[in-house]
Amino acid sequence: MDRNVRAWVDGWIVSRGAAPPVVEPWGCTIDMGTDGHVTRHVFGAVNEDVAETDVRKVAGAVTGAGVWLKVFRDPAVVGDWLGEGWWIDPEPGYLMTLPLTTTPDRPAVPHGYRLRTWSRGGVTRTMLAAPDGSWAARGQLAPTGATAVVDQVATSPAHQCKGLGTFVMRTLQHAAAEQGAETCVLAGTPDGRALYESLGWTVRALLTSAKFTGR
Image (cartoon, rainbow, N blue to C red; front, side):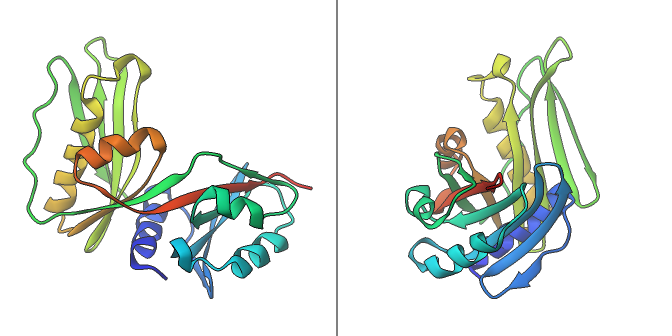
């Protein structure tokens, strides 16, 4: 399995409280146990190393709704490999990494906002509350030794374009370095890619997300 994919899987299951991954010849299977997200199959290869035969075989064996595939290749390619009953996110995600060569400075809290950061169950969470007490931004981090996964970064629509996403990311990167991580990993969206790249993150592979809805 590609080392960045494995690092993302290891941190993501901690971040989301998922079952330990079951290793397969093509990647791994992770049980989530929720409505609409029962199980996900994550393929271990990236880019041109993803085997079409593996994806077709795994997808063809799925019979229950709510099973997801995570394939680190362009949806325009993977979509042609899936049969009836698969919904495919038309926008690709991005597997991204950031080396932590030094411990980043702890960022200053944006004026008027309240910061709360706490750790529980191996996950560090950070939250910004607006001056009126409403939710403004959040994110979380799951360190797993030399790597740490950044997850569920979000900013309230009412507080976008104020640098809050940058603050959350820098806070999590600082926490990762303090906890001994040497590399950060995430699976980002098109909306988040520009922010992450501005902070030094690099795209390693595209990501296709597909959900089986039933034939």
